[in-house]
Amino acid sequence: MKHRHSRRSELPFHWPQPPLHVVLVNPEIPPNTGNVARLCAATGSILHLIEPMGFRITNAKLKRAGLDYWDSIDIRVHRDFDSFVAAAAPARLLLFSTGGRQSYLDASYRPADALVFGCETKGLPEALLESHRKAVFGIPMRTDHVRSLNLSSAVAIVVYEALRQINAGKAVP
Image (cartoon, rainbow, N blue to C red; front, side):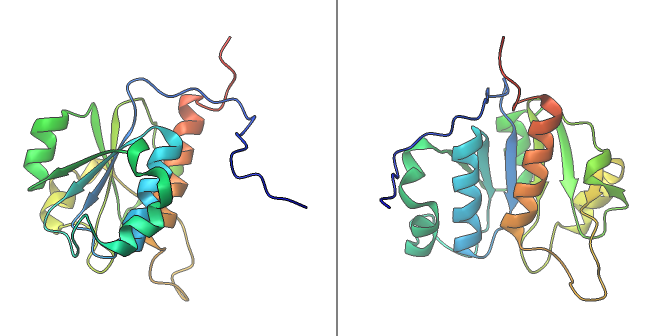
């Protein structure tokens, strides 16, 4: 049986307007960022990378994880978090952390929300978590065996829940 790579999904989908903002603060691992970039291409989300990063945007592993989707990604690099907020002016900030005391399922997502994730080894800076305490969410998991989820997995879980709530998967009349 021959694989058809050009086959399009027949599932209904409309892009939330304005789109979601996916924000990676100080990402360190190129393949994770590449996978998130691919997710953003698939969902029409804008990807924001906050410096410093543990790699260069031209990194081969980053490019390989994003495959041939790079021209479909709206990717923006910011020198720090404040620069991101000033440039993007997101509707709201929702932060995701293993220390979050509210479930990501309890958040009410809207178009133009910024979904903010920290780096793989340190998470989000404590000062940022403190200044947005009421907007910090976590993904429930068994912590007796696992310290955290892979960054790209966590982003995918949250982005698709946000899209579900926004009704992005519903047919447009």
